[in-house]
Image 1 (spheres, helix red, strand yellow):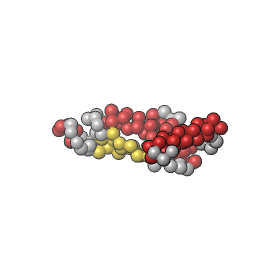
Image 2 (tube, rainbow, N blue to C red):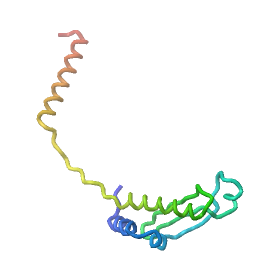
Image 3 (tube, rainbow, N blue to C red):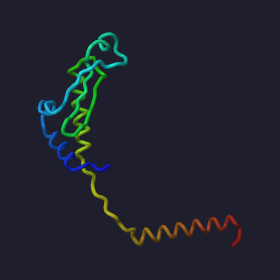
Image 4 (cartoon, rainbow, N blue to C red):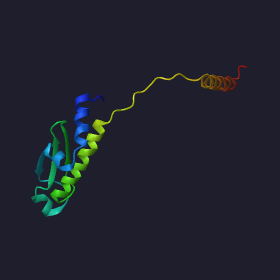
Length: 123
């Protein structure tokens, strides 16, 4: 997956911000989270969705009954996603096999061929 450089730069810049500044860059939505958790969870808007405007990354947290706890969990997930987005993989360089590895590979092929020939019973 190739990430555009401006998106990677925006993710790096966002990672350097503290929590309050990062939340200021996000669109925060609260909603009723479904699933297990009983009456309290089913009637309060404790689920949190954070959409980071500069990068377009969206994360949610619905596992707690408490909105502040869900906000903290969503912020943690957002930082993890931004870190993954900002990561630049190392460039791979082509290498050549050494002479010793070529010789070992050829010896292994020769031995395998000899075993097969012995099974055929021709030699």
